[in-house]
Image (tube, rainbow, N blue to C red; front, side):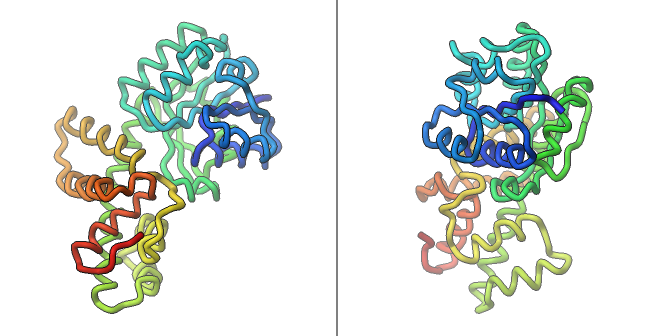
Amino acid sequence: MPATVGVVGLGIMGSAYAGHLLDAGVAVGGFDVDPAALAAFVARGGQPAESARVLAERSDVVISALPSVPALEAAFFGADGLAAGARAGLIVVEASTFSLAVKESARARLAERGAAMLDAPVSGTGSQARVRDIAIYASGERTAYDIARPVLERFARSVRYVGAFGNGSKLKYVANLLVTIHNLSTAEAVVLAQKAGLDPLEMLDVVGDGAGASRMLQVRGPLMAAGTYDEPGMKLEVYQKDLEIIAAFAQEVGAPTPLFSVSAMFHTAALAQGRGKQDTAAIASVLRTMAGLPTDP
């Protein structure tokens, strides 16, 4: 088990990873550009770093949980970024969802400083991360994976080594394609139950015990039934990045994605309603409007 672990990006996902590591008695350092996120991390028992560079200098393994490519560029390659503090033997576990080109570029530039990088995206929402119910698809150098695995197992239900660098991201694209489709199918089911005069929570309980069950029915169905989306496990505005990446990847490899394409339209429609800060479950509000039901907050 590495002596010191760092987490760069202490938002919805990163704060959950750090919390589980702290609960396991691991020494955890953290950095975030948001003072409030860093303060919450310190209150949880973490050791703050004044920059990503300092975090890299202090850590054996750094977990990266960042929301965008600009955030990654700043945290990794800014004047006080991880690369500036990297050294031979440092392992960076990039757990976000980005294009393969972005991840390959980051890996190459970190390698120039002697650091290894794993492509290890996470499948699961923020609410799942908080209860250690996420899966990690780790890819890259097997030696680096073997060192990082005990760290990852402290905050994930499932940790899978999936081979060559980039395979993790490819699997995450497939997983999120299904999440996107199942999110819309769950919204359809909830709104149909409401229009039919059924109790949507009872519907979720009954249908979720049969062949119609899915993780999105379980995770996002209750949010849709309640019409409350202001404690996001994944913000719509952040997930839009994932939708664009999946669409571009599918086009690149020549795979048809008809259900995904339709589902993505409803996520975009929810953004147009001004719901970018809300959970992706808010796509149900688009269907509720179409169905003539009262608009969700």
